Image 1 (cartoon, rainbow, N blue to C red):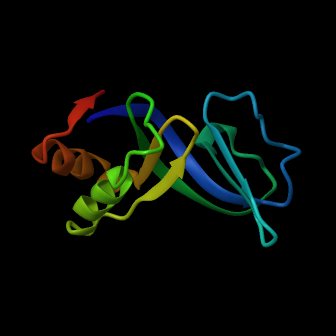
Image 2: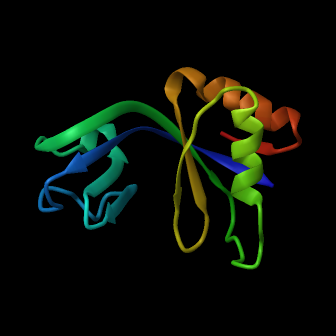
Image 3: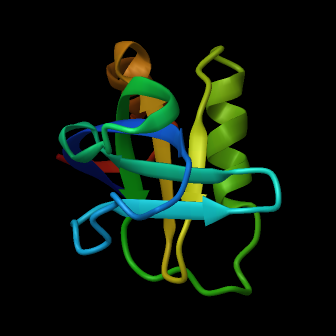
Length: 122
């Protein structure tokens, strides 16, 4: 499986609503429930009126389109990193999964995955 590094720094935040969110930006993940409106975006594109925010995330995606019948792909990555005490924040789209890791741990996470046979495209 090939991992593609995304050369952006990301912010995970809660917003009051999505009115200030640039949905045309290259990376913009939104989630809305009865409890909150969440946003993951490039740090430089973070709306000013966030309720809470966590800066300092880096990300990679699983390269290619993942078939819905595939199982355990994200779980394996999460397990490998959890055993090295590296936390993740995952976002899934129709095509693939994105994994965010705090920037201080990002290089180590990539090394762990490479040691396990993942191909890293930077």
